[in-house]
Image (cartoon, rainbow, N blue to C red; front, side):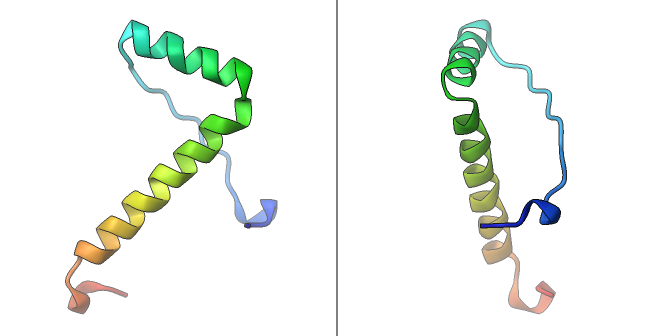
Length: 60
């Protein structure tokens, strides 16, 4: 787990279809931390995917 000093606050605005937005809002009200964890998970997977598809010679 990261220390809070390793984190930065980011505000994200997303346009969603009304039905999906209503579902997301209901989840946010029921379990505010769930969306945070879900977004962290998805972003981590995306970063790993991007890193793995990058040719080895271009990796840091």
